[in-house]
Amino acid sequence: MYPLRRNRRLRTTPAIRHLVRETIITPSDFLVPLFVVEGKGIKEEIASMPDYYRLSLDNLEKEVKELWNMGLCAVLLFVKVPERLKDNKGTEAVNKDGLMQRAIKAVKTACPEMLVMTDVALDPYSSYGHDGIVGAGQILNDDTTEVLAEMSVSHALAGADFVAPSDMMDGRILTIREALEDEGLVNTGIMSYSAKYASAFYGPFRDALDSAPVDKINVPKDKSTYQMDSANRFEALKETLMDIDEGADIVMVKPGLCYLDIVREIKNEVDVPVAVYQVSGEYAMLKAAVEKGWLDHDAVMMEQLIAIKRAGANIIASYFAKDAVKLMG
Ligand code: PBG
Image (cartoon, rainbow, N blue to C red; front, side):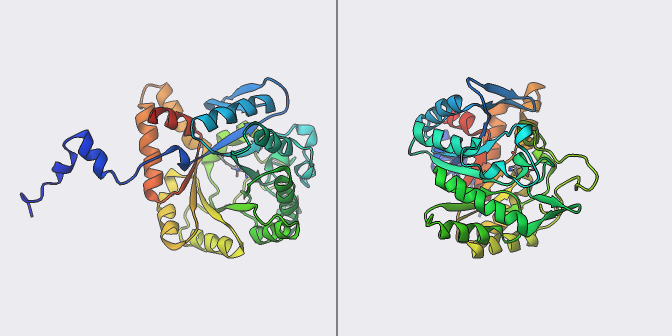
């Protein structure tokens, strides 16, 4: 009872605040998304993601060495595929000499201990900008999961430690797990985007990879027949538990900040690590406000990252990873 318990005693100095702090962010919390392009010497800034770049393989190698030296030891790879290699079947996605497959090898050569995760979905390879194969105005579920399984095996053979299916087809975790087991790739993990919402926060990412759904007759104009409705909470748990049953080693909630209630809900229910993806739109919002002089970049960034971890994230995929670690000193 007051005045015996004065809560402010625990806030009087930096030392006591530090001693009683419940949530601490460290470099090992982060998964760093990286965008890869063909070419040499390329480091091009993404228009809607200030200070974030598409890298050619030589610069990718430099970048992962730098990340490793900063204590960042896990990356999540995405590739920007030239338009002429796109089709409706993901043919290029399973090319063993494709950009993703070469990128995995480049990272492992430059930095063998770096944990490499790869995005598995068809959108960067799709002439329609969808995560799956389009047929009769729909995204064909079971045809797509077969390609995703083949793609996963191809990434694993190139050296990926984890595949990260981001497509939200039904049953894809089981199909991928079985395909990996059949190939003897028993140690390749699966980080499933389990509760991935049909979100408007992915806009800048689609600019980065030129992967937005195209506006064409008989092509769904958005991803709402496979990604989740942002209004749904219980469905997130159902999706996540099913993915764990099918063999997911890590589950993910995406986007981050608007969905921290979902993160906590899932964290309370599951016994596997929970990842959160702080997505491109979240990054862009803060950068834009900072450009206007309206928010303090470092303070808001750290507050957001701590909120994500406090909500229950064991792993944070974030474009702010480097900035945050620099701040940790
Ligand atoms: C591809 C994929 C997307 C993101 C990650 N993987 C885009 C989408 O689903 O349309 C978004 C990441 C971000 O916005 O930072 N399936």
